[in-house]
Length: 446
Image (cartoon, rainbow, N blue to C red; front, side, top):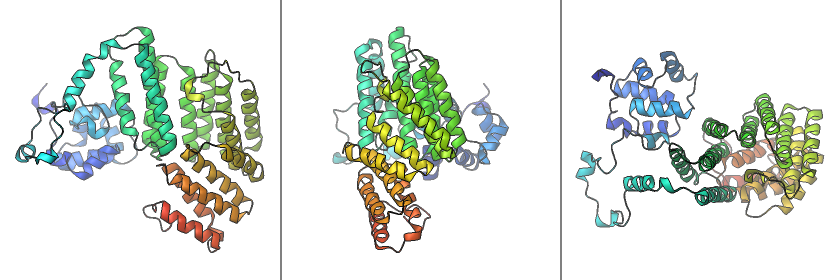
């Protein structure tokens, strides 16, 4: 390869620039490409060649008409432009200088004070990687069970505290498991690893969805689909498609939501052994899509199907672990939310109120989310005092969990209070909202 075509290192001043760091962190490749062009003199045609993209595609990205979401494309950008993998949320790339050998002038000139030095008993990250490689040949069914147990723990902590703080650990474990897939293993172990990687990718997508970072969420949901497809796990593919359907309702794309949940149901019905609980959950997601479209007949039909499937559940059913959350309480509250989305507040209120009374105190996000929906149905019926009281309860739960999705709902409730803004109960809620949730950037209200 001619020297002119060899990937060159980007200037250190660019890689350490806060604007570049932030652009890479959120994978804003329009900004990344512009910075690479202006600060490193690497023009779009050269970016395209190095990243194995077409010049027109690079131009569309820079103009903001296209986004790059697929992991293989992001890896090519990292490798072609020599952007360290860690800056883009990837594992260390093969071309990166081992950290133990990378000593810049700045590092050499700074001698840390004794109290700043890392404990001598902790190995460096490259030693950790070497040790991980050395243990990769001894995976067993017990190892897979340990992975699954950690995923269950991640989901519990996500319910209690939100996924923001969990995400780095989940992404790290995802990349570790994907690395394990590159080795040849017995089919039972390899298939188990694919299933674990798919669930970790879905969990990562969920944490981004809950943070309202929809592009990143979609990228990880897509990766989860691809991993599940490798082992033809159609029930899990249905689960991921259902997550994407729910996200589409939040993005005001109800037609997309319906298309995705319909595809999810097709996958589930084509799989062997799909359980009634899975089909019930999918029917409820279908009800959400129809309700967002404003179709009363279709919403009621889907709700009826969800309840009909739920009645068929047997204790001996081989339910996948990821659907066990969909219990009777969840069925009831989701039924209420579907009616609430449709504008049938009087039908929705008693269902959501009953579920909220019985909901576990540890599920802070769920309690905040469901209290918001209860407050909304009460407000829709003109019960201002009750609605503000319920929304204040939602704020207490929301303050204990990092969930921009829940925070957004509560700000939405505040907007719905506009006709009553001067009422004492509305003013009290506003004061509490300002105290608990930070204001949105560029907004005059919480």
